Length: 111
Image (cartoon, rainbow, N blue to C red; front, top):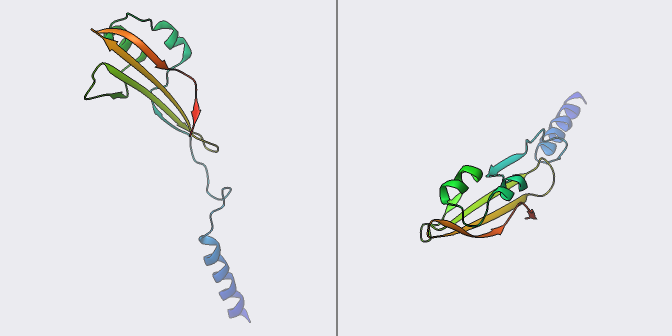
């Protein structure tokens, strides 16, 4: 009888080890990736600023297009411990070394 209980206990542990319960998985820290652009930073950026001035305020862009170096992309993704991922995307276009157009901003889009 004792051997049956031990084997049933072992089989139960083995069966439950393949299950994934969110409350058993432990702590998962939030993951921040990219450049977080705050609204106050974006308010400082004005059309006609040089690339160096924009870089000073916002930092280096996350992506620079190899075929179009006049386009800078700032991407920020937040994956919280629980919930959906949030992605923010800001694109800046330059013409003759000056900022010509701003697309996007600190608004979030869920993925």
